Length: 112
Image (cartoon, rainbow, N blue to C red):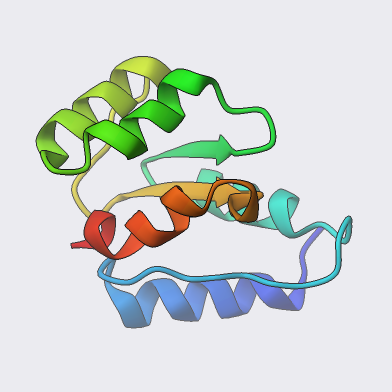
């Protein structure tokens, strides 16, 4: 299921060099989550999908209490999801982020 948006995601990856966030908006249930996860799987060494519709309260607590120490935050995140993150070669996907505004406001700190 290749879509035009995939090419836009590739352009974003090339242009940002892993140093920026991307907000993908659109109608519900049209495949945004699907295509972003396929992109992450194909274009990055690893990825973590945080679906705030179903994410565990432990993950939400990381956003509330651990953002002041990003090393601890990423260590807890990788441990919780059992996924190694590689510097500028991993993607963290926030799905349904509107359900947890604390995560959305944390994006600029996480990208840095």
